Length: 336
Length: 297
Image 1 (cartoon, rainbow over the protein chains, first blue to last red):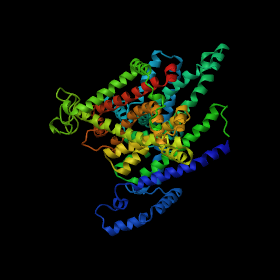
Image 2 (cartoon, each protein chain N blue to C red):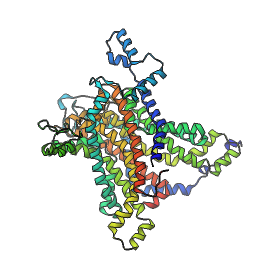
Image 3 (tube, rainbow over the protein chains, first blue to last red):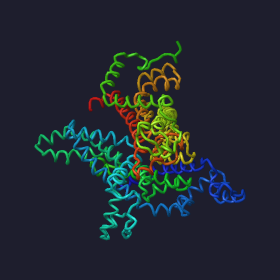
Image 4 (cartoon, each protein chain N blue to C red):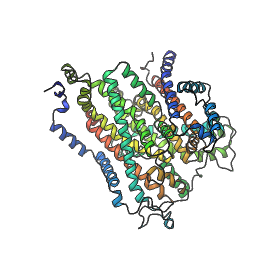
């Protein structure tokens, strides 16, 4: 197993080099001169020239690439000039908010989609099955940014049952003592129930918004893989032995039907990273996604470049973890 | 008759019965028909927008700004008093055009790359497919954002971004198809009689691989519209005052809190129904073209 993981990580190295190369190329096709962007349009030519030298833009392109890669390995992603901090500092301060949002939406998606998919398959062609199929169909077509705004309109503007979409906690309430950076968890750990309730109310809408697309796709996949599995001979055998239907489904069918769903869940992680950028923007969520939108609007390329690079690497690692989980779900799968 | 003109591909054999079955099955697939209906409606709106739009999409009218749906403005007006219905109708042109060009770029680059990688194999094939794997390692929207941010906001940037993001999937699909097809007897026979590689690829392999690629292209249209409108929403795509659905939602965003729902609701419905149309048609085509799926449904 350890050997397999090492081999997979080694195979990933050329891929990572490719990812670094692409982000480097993207940074070099910028329409404007980065030195002019930093110095300002009115800056004298000698100031622009000095910045060009400082940034290494006067060097040949391959040296610029080597320099870029070297800095990346040192954890230097550059400076976000719209905040005045290093990109790494900005990421570190905003990362827990994004983690909290993403984990909550994955949790909601799994909690709803898996039972819905199972029930839809077991009770095929029932009203519940039709409802779940319509939901899956619509959920996959609705743009995230529109859904978020409609949720704000209904739950905040119209019915006023959830707080304004402004951050993670209301202004008058103190955030919980930071332990993990996740407000829900920290408030529970420190026993601050006021902060817990308020941060939960703030989290509900963005988490539902981000989870909807994933929920729809997982429910659809769970239904189709469950339908395939419950038609297999070993399920018929289990039923013939007199096993209870709930046991047949939960014990025999689910673990096998879950493998394709797990693959999809790994692939959905990419969607969640992209979705977080939009969701955080709509709900003024102080995470990395909202920070990236601010960077886009300020034409500050260093954070976008760093985010693109980190997303691709994390996405590749998540899919490796998914591959490893296959063996946990199905003991027949061995890693050699 | 020269060797190159000899057609040994099964595609060239006209099979009326097969065609009839395809249309019969498509007509029986209600969801695919609903999808086709939405696509036809939006395409028609896009084509005849200048003739049916009640107002100019960019004409401002500060007196009637932020009006809800009325007889004069069926879908209301925005913060500049512009007619939302007219902007949605004109917006259909941009969304469908962006989708078509984006998918066209993915198709025109991805399909030949996949075919060459599979047909010639070896180091060239490995190199092409590893490059595709690297592109696939990026989450789609993030890559599209990075490309659009690099190129600068605008319609062309959005189209290029959407196009590049779709290349690896077309390449992988074509690679898989070509790998299977190149072992078939009709390809071997073509090689044996000296037909050129390019002729084999374009006249024999490509038409036989077209089914799954057509399905993917249809499904990609919906995705392309979604990505392009997301880019516009984030300020990276089409810029105001050009009427584009994602940009319209972005402009109407701040008014949702004060209860002016129509600025966001109608453009959103336009995006959702157009994506739904392409997804339903794509699913329907897949069901009809793949008999295994047809039987398991």
